[in-house]
Length: 238
Image (tube, rainbow, N blue to C red; front, side, top):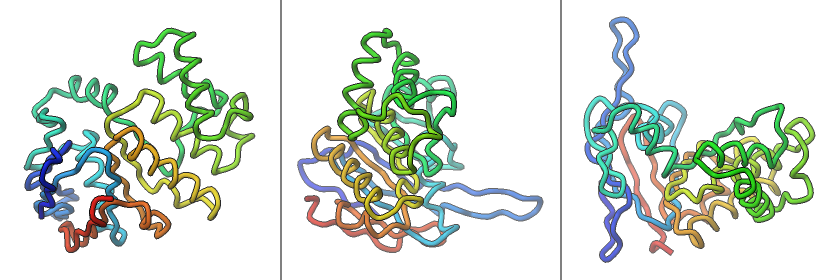
C-alpha cells in the first residue's frame, strides 16, 4: 500500500519488506511484504495488536534489524545495502530513537544524558552543554537538568529521552510506545513534543503505539495485523 502525495518527496521508501523468525522447524512470518512511503514533517503512527509486526517494522526501517528481503531507501540511500559499520554511522548521523523504557544512564543527570550523545557525534564539551541546555529547556526540564533518573518522574524521564533524541536534530525520529507508561498529563506533553518536532523541525516521525492519545496528533495512521497493512488513513496530511 502506497500513499504518495504529489509534490512531497518521500523521505523513506519501503518496498516489499519481509521478515521472519525461525525457532527450530517453526518459521514465523512477521512481516509479509510491507510497502509504503513516509513523508518529511509528518507523524506516522502504526497501530495493531501484540505480535502484529509493528515493532519489527520499526526496527527494520530504522536499521536495527535486517529484513529477509525488500528494500528501505532513506533520502536516496539504500539502507540495507550498507555495511554494518556504515549503517551504525548512518543511524548516528540521521536517526533519533525514543523507547518505552527510557534507556537512561542511572549514574548521569539529565543534562549529562544529552551531552554524552552529542560528544559521541563529535561535539566539543562547551557546545554540547549549550545544546543540551537549550533542548532540555525546550521540553520543559531546565529546572531539573541536574537530577538523575531516580530523582525524576516517569514523564520527566521520557522528556529527557526525547531531548536526547532531538538534540542532534535528526531528520528521522523513531518512537516505540513512547507514552504507554505515562499518565494522561505526561502522555499529552510527550505527544505534543513529537508533534512539534514534525511540524517545526520537519522531522519524519514513525511511532509505534497502542495509545489512542496519539491519534489526534498523527498525520497518518496505519493499522497492521498479521504482518500486513490492513488500513492506511491520512488526515489530509495536516
